[in-house]
Amino acid sequence: MSQTKKVAIIMGSDSDYPVVKKAGEVLHDFGVPFEMRVLSAHRSPAQVAEFAKNARENGFGVIIAAAGMAAHLAGAVAANTTLPVIAIPVKAKALEGVDALLSSVMMPPGVPVATVGIDTAANAGHLAVEILAVSDSGLRDKLDAFRKKQNEKNLDADRKMQETVREITG
Image (tube, rainbow, N blue to C red):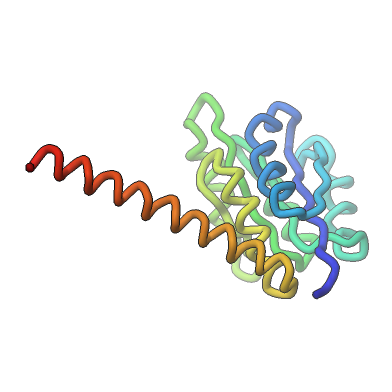
């Protein structure tokens, strides 16, 4: 088993924290080390580029970038690293996050950004775990156990539903 790489969670504004917190919680639950930063593609572009260029050497394996509205952060990060980048489009008032979603998924060829749904930071955390688990057998075992538990919970809910239906139909 190799040492688990860190995950960077970058948000364009500290107002994004209530959304990205869920990614941190998922990573913590899986024992994945992470760091959170507030770096803006528009207000601190040099620092975003510098962070992304040095991320691999600083022990990161995946970068999660959360931003709303124009949501250029994930693309700015991806332009400066070959590490996997996951975008979390954050809901803003004007277009309910659709603007951020489209900005995140419409990347030019050769500069991909994986994108989760609007405000779905937990899925970004799970995707980061899956990416790291490709080369980390301990993390892969934790992920397998998590999926098994999800399956058991779902099957238990199905059993209860079948009992409920039997009560209705006799």
